Image (cartoon, helix red, strand yellow):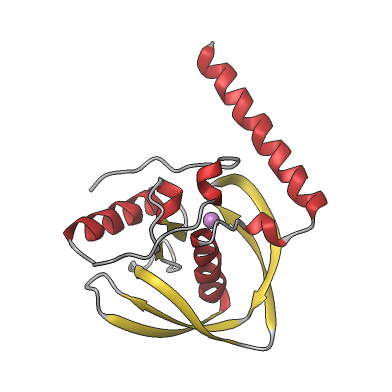
Length: 175
Ligand code: NI
């Protein structure tokens, strides 16, 4: 397994739409395992393949507590097949927008259909933080970031901060 570099905003690669996965083969499983390790190391609770520069429809999620057993979910070609009428709101963050957080409103529960790590068809009902996390990661597959759900004013504030942090890092690296 290997740690993969995570792309951070603003980067045009995060805006691209991911293509469906044809077959869950050894290469895809390797990517999923590397994504999971990268996510745990970050640390984060979700990661989409496009965030490590692979624009394919695959996400990994694990919302289990750090001190408990790990419960990773591998979702390939995920599709939302049902959503609740009621919404819920969580403060979201993203490994591609380091140290940035905002409240985002989404359907409180969802039903999602996907292929697992073995290429087997699965369906899952999710609510709470898991529902939010899966929807956040699936947004990445459409080139959508959580800041795209908030007001332009707040979004620009966050993006300006990120740009400033990136420039500072580059300046430091350049000495
Ligand atoms: Ni994200």
